[in-house]
Length: 117
Image (cartoon, rainbow, N blue to C red; front, side, top):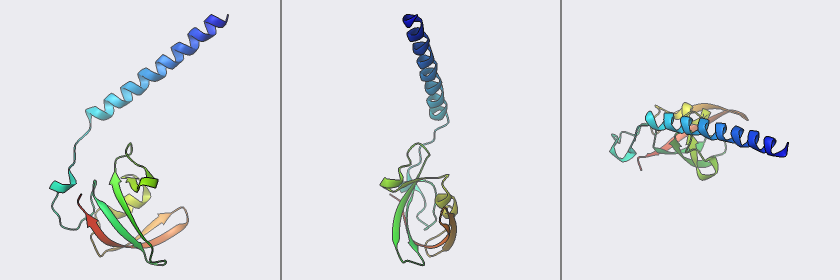
């Protein structure tokens, strides 16, 4: 009986691994390489750039790099392009003021700098 349970657990694990492989293959198939250093340096926030923003209430500055979902690491300053902060910043320019809905409520930021690194 124990061998049968181990066999079914191994089959289930194999199915999980195969599904993960299909997911990764699909992501790789649709991937595009974007080199921010080749983008026009017009001060506009786009995917791949780093941005320095200042909280207009606290004057605290933060720097984030806008990356894909799989690369996001908030503690390392890398935010997903699909995050509320990134969605609020995409398309804005240096000097713009932006209101972003956060879990703590609406926060107003000023775009201090856009870095094409």
